[in-house]
Amino acid sequence: MDFVGVLGADAPDPELERRAAVRALGFDVAGLVAQRHLEDSGSLGVQTSESDGVLVSATVSRQYTLWRNPDDRDDPVNLAVLDDERRRSLEEVPPWPRPAWLIAGVERMRYPMLWEAVQTHWSVPGATRPTATATLVEHVRYVLMNRYRDEHGVPDPTEHPWPVLVDERSVQPGHPVLVDDVERPGLLLDTDPFVLGLAIELDDGRLLTAVLPRDELPLLTVAFDSAAPLEPGAAPTPSPVPAPGTP
Image (cartoon, rainbow, N blue to C red; front, side, top):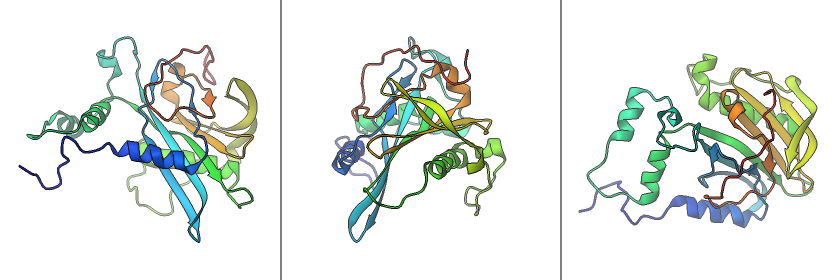
Protein backbone atom coordinates (compact mmCIF):
# COMPACT_ATOMS: atom_id res chain seq x y z
CA MET A 1 0.00 0.00 0.00
CA ASP A 2 1.28 3.47 -0.85
CA PHE A 3 0.89 6.44 1.50
CA VAL A 4 0.76 9.95 0.09
CA GLY A 5 3.74 11.95 1.34
CA VAL A 6 5.32 8.93 3.00
CA LEU A 7 8.89 7.88 2.25
CA GLY A 8 9.39 4.27 1.30
CA ALA A 9 11.76 2.09 3.30
CA ASP A 10 14.20 2.15 0.38
CA ALA A 11 14.17 5.94 -0.09
CA PRO A 12 17.72 7.26 -0.56
CA ASP A 13 19.34 9.34 2.14
CA PRO A 14 19.31 12.99 0.98
CA GLU A 15 22.52 13.61 2.92
CA LEU A 16 24.39 11.45 0.40
CA GLU A 17 23.35 13.78 -2.41
CA ARG A 18 24.16 16.83 -0.30
CA ARG A 19 27.65 15.54 0.52
CA ALA A 20 28.25 14.84 -3.17
CA ALA A 21 27.17 18.40 -3.97
CA VAL A 22 29.61 19.75 -1.38
CA ARG A 23 32.46 17.72 -2.86
CA ALA A 24 31.60 19.16 -6.27
CA LEU A 25 32.12 22.68 -4.90
CA GLY A 26 35.84 21.94 -4.97
CA PHE A 27 36.99 23.25 -1.59
CA ASP A 28 37.66 21.62 1.77
CA VAL A 29 35.15 21.97 4.59
CA ALA A 30 36.42 22.78 8.06
CA GLY A 31 35.08 21.34 11.30
CA LEU A 32 35.85 20.77 14.93
CA VAL A 33 38.54 18.18 15.58
CA ALA A 34 37.26 14.70 16.39
CA GLN A 35 36.60 14.43 20.12
CA ARG A 36 34.89 12.23 22.69
CA HIS A 37 31.82 14.33 23.43
CA LEU A 38 30.85 15.14 19.84
CA GLU A 39 29.54 13.03 16.99
CA ASP A 40 29.58 14.34 13.44
CA SER A 41 26.67 12.63 11.70
CA GLY A 42 27.75 13.96 8.32
CA SER A 43 24.79 16.35 8.13
CA LEU A 44 25.72 19.47 6.14
CA GLY A 45 24.04 22.75 5.35
CA VAL A 46 24.85 24.40 2.03
CA GLN A 47 24.22 27.92 0.72
CA THR A 48 25.53 29.05 -2.65
CA SER A 49 25.46 32.23 -4.72
CA GLU A 50 25.85 32.46 -8.49
CA SER A 51 26.37 35.24 -11.01
CA ASP A 52 25.37 34.55 -14.63
CA GLY A 53 25.23 30.86 -13.81
CA VAL A 54 28.73 30.79 -12.31
CA LEU A 55 29.33 29.92 -8.67
CA VAL A 56 30.85 32.91 -6.86
CA SER A 57 30.45 32.02 -3.19
CA ALA A 58 29.36 29.20 -0.93
CA THR A 59 28.95 28.48 2.77
CA VAL A 60 28.94 24.94 4.17
CA SER A 61 27.93 24.32 7.76
CA ARG A 62 28.34 21.39 10.13
CA GLN A 63 26.33 20.30 13.14
CA TYR A 64 27.23 17.85 15.87
CA THR A 65 25.40 15.63 18.35
CA LEU A 66 26.61 16.22 21.91
CA TRP A 67 27.20 13.28 24.26
CA ARG A 68 27.63 14.43 27.85
CA ASN A 69 28.50 10.85 28.82
CA PRO A 70 30.01 9.27 25.71
CA ASP A 71 30.93 6.09 27.61
CA ASP A 72 27.26 5.26 28.22
CA ARG A 73 24.94 6.60 25.55
CA ASP A 74 21.92 5.23 27.43
CA ASP A 75 22.67 7.53 30.37
CA PRO A 76 19.71 9.95 30.69
CA VAL A 77 22.18 12.80 31.16
CA ASN A 78 22.72 12.64 27.39
CA LEU A 79 19.11 13.53 26.57
CA ALA A 80 18.08 16.98 25.41
CA VAL A 81 15.47 18.98 27.30
CA LEU A 82 12.30 18.59 25.21
CA ASP A 83 8.80 19.93 25.62
CA ASP A 84 5.92 17.46 25.85
CA GLU A 85 4.82 18.03 22.25
CA ARG A 86 8.26 17.32 20.82
CA ARG A 87 8.70 14.27 23.06
CA ARG A 88 5.37 12.82 21.95
CA SER A 89 6.19 13.38 18.28
CA LEU A 90 9.47 11.49 18.65
CA GLU A 91 7.80 8.59 20.42
CA GLU A 92 5.10 8.11 17.78
CA VAL A 93 5.93 5.25 15.43
CA PRO A 94 4.00 5.33 12.12
CA PRO A 95 2.33 2.14 10.84
CA TRP A 96 4.58 1.93 7.78
CA PRO A 97 8.26 1.07 7.34
CA ARG A 98 10.73 3.95 7.30
CA PRO A 99 14.22 4.15 5.82
CA ALA A 100 17.02 3.48 8.29
CA TRP A 101 18.52 6.95 7.81
CA LEU A 102 15.20 8.58 8.76
CA ILE A 103 14.87 6.46 11.90
CA ALA A 104 18.42 7.39 12.88
CA GLY A 105 17.71 11.08 12.25
CA VAL A 106 14.61 11.01 14.45
CA GLU A 107 16.59 9.26 17.18
CA ARG A 108 19.29 11.95 17.07
CA MET A 109 16.64 14.57 17.80
CA ARG A 110 16.45 13.20 21.35
CA TYR A 111 19.93 14.53 22.05
CA PRO A 112 21.38 18.04 22.17
CA MET A 113 22.93 19.35 18.99
CA LEU A 114 25.54 21.96 18.20
CA TRP A 115 23.51 23.45 15.34
CA GLU A 116 25.37 25.34 12.59
CA ALA A 117 28.42 25.01 14.84
CA VAL A 118 31.11 25.52 12.18
CA GLN A 119 30.76 27.28 8.86
CA THR A 120 33.26 27.34 5.99
CA HIS A 121 32.89 30.37 3.72
CA TRP A 122 34.41 30.31 0.23
CA SER A 123 34.35 32.85 -2.57
CA VAL A 124 35.90 32.94 -6.00
CA PRO A 125 39.30 34.70 -6.00
CA GLY A 126 38.92 38.43 -6.52
CA ALA A 127 35.26 38.55 -5.54
CA THR A 128 34.01 41.19 -3.13
CA ARG A 129 32.75 39.59 0.04
CA PRO A 130 31.74 40.67 3.57
CA THR A 131 34.55 41.14 6.06
CA ALA A 132 35.47 38.34 8.44
CA THR A 133 34.06 40.43 11.28
CA ALA A 134 30.71 40.92 9.55
CA THR A 135 30.52 37.23 8.64
CA LEU A 136 31.19 36.14 12.21
CA VAL A 137 28.53 38.50 13.56
CA GLU A 138 26.01 37.20 11.02
CA HIS A 139 26.76 33.58 11.96
CA VAL A 140 26.30 34.32 15.67
CA ARG A 141 23.07 36.25 15.04
CA TYR A 142 21.71 33.43 12.89
CA VAL A 143 22.27 30.85 15.63
CA LEU A 144 20.83 33.11 18.32
CA MET A 145 17.69 33.93 16.36
CA ASN A 146 17.04 30.30 15.50
CA ARG A 147 18.08 28.59 18.75
CA TYR A 148 18.02 31.19 21.53
CA ARG A 149 14.95 33.32 20.79
CA ASP A 150 13.23 32.48 24.05
CA GLU A 151 16.38 33.12 26.08
CA HIS A 152 16.70 36.54 24.47
CA GLY A 153 12.96 37.28 24.69
CA VAL A 154 12.44 37.52 20.93
CA PRO A 155 8.87 36.21 20.43
CA ASP A 156 8.51 36.59 16.65
CA PRO A 157 11.18 34.91 14.47
CA THR A 158 9.91 36.79 11.41
CA GLU A 159 10.43 40.19 13.02
CA HIS A 160 12.38 42.55 10.77
CA PRO A 161 14.75 44.07 11.33
CA TRP A 162 16.13 41.54 13.78
CA PRO A 163 17.02 42.96 17.19
CA VAL A 164 20.69 43.79 17.66
CA LEU A 165 21.89 40.93 19.88
CA VAL A 166 25.55 41.24 18.85
CA ASP A 167 27.42 43.70 16.66
CA GLU A 168 30.78 44.20 14.99
CA ARG A 169 32.03 46.60 17.66
CA SER A 170 32.26 43.68 20.09
CA VAL A 171 34.50 41.51 17.89
CA GLN A 172 38.03 41.24 19.29
CA PRO A 173 40.92 40.72 16.84
CA GLY A 174 44.06 38.75 17.59
CA HIS A 175 42.41 35.97 19.59
CA PRO A 176 44.33 32.67 19.27
CA VAL A 177 42.45 29.97 17.33
CA LEU A 178 43.87 26.48 16.94
CA VAL A 179 43.61 25.10 13.39
CA ASP A 180 45.45 22.00 12.17
CA ASP A 181 47.46 21.97 15.44
CA VAL A 182 48.74 25.50 14.79
CA GLU A 183 47.65 28.48 16.89
CA ARG A 184 46.85 31.48 14.74
CA PRO A 185 45.39 34.95 15.38
CA GLY A 186 41.67 35.03 14.78
CA LEU A 187 38.52 36.84 15.91
CA LEU A 188 36.55 36.43 19.12
CA LEU A 189 32.94 37.46 19.82
CA ASP A 190 32.49 36.98 23.55
CA THR A 191 29.61 39.24 24.61
CA ASP A 192 26.55 37.00 24.30
CA PRO A 193 25.59 35.09 27.47
CA PHE A 194 24.66 31.93 25.56
CA VAL A 195 27.23 31.42 22.79
CA LEU A 196 30.86 32.10 21.94
CA GLY A 197 31.86 33.12 18.41
CA LEU A 198 35.22 32.54 16.71
CA ALA A 199 36.60 33.18 13.23
CA ILE A 200 39.88 32.54 11.42
CA GLU A 201 40.93 33.28 7.85
CA LEU A 202 42.73 30.33 6.28
CA ASP A 203 45.73 30.52 3.97
CA ASP A 204 43.76 29.44 0.90
CA GLY A 205 41.21 32.26 1.28
CA ARG A 206 38.49 30.34 3.06
CA LEU A 207 36.98 31.79 6.23
CA LEU A 208 36.08 29.55 9.17
CA THR A 209 33.48 30.76 11.67
CA ALA A 210 32.23 28.87 14.72
CA VAL A 211 29.41 29.43 17.21
CA LEU A 212 29.58 27.26 20.33
CA PRO A 213 27.18 27.04 23.32
CA ARG A 214 28.73 28.35 26.52
CA ASP A 215 27.06 25.71 28.70
CA GLU A 216 28.87 22.95 26.82
CA LEU A 217 32.32 24.57 26.54
CA PRO A 218 33.77 22.52 29.44
CA LEU A 219 33.11 19.37 27.39
CA LEU A 220 34.49 20.69 24.11
CA THR A 221 37.91 20.80 22.54
CA VAL A 222 37.89 24.15 20.77
CA ALA A 223 40.23 23.27 17.93
CA PHE A 224 39.57 22.90 14.23
CA ASP A 225 40.47 20.73 11.27
CA SER A 226 40.59 22.81 8.08
CA ALA A 227 39.66 19.77 5.99
CA ALA A 228 37.53 17.58 8.23
CA PRO A 229 36.20 14.36 6.62
CA LEU A 230 32.73 14.67 5.14
CA GLU A 231 31.80 11.09 5.95
CA PRO A 232 30.37 10.40 9.41
CA GLY A 233 31.84 7.86 11.79
CA ALA A 234 35.39 9.14 12.17
CA ALA A 235 36.94 7.63 15.28
CA PRO A 236 36.90 10.19 18.10
CA THR A 237 40.24 11.09 19.63
CA PRO A 238 40.43 13.00 22.91
CA SER A 239 42.51 16.15 22.99
CA PRO A 240 43.99 18.02 25.95
CA VAL A 241 43.24 21.45 24.44
CA PRO A 242 40.94 23.33 26.88
CA ALA A 243 38.02 25.51 25.91
CA PRO A 244 38.43 29.28 26.24
CA GLY A 245 37.69 30.44 29.75
CA THR A 246 37.87 26.97 31.32
CA PRO A 247 40.46 26.01 33.94
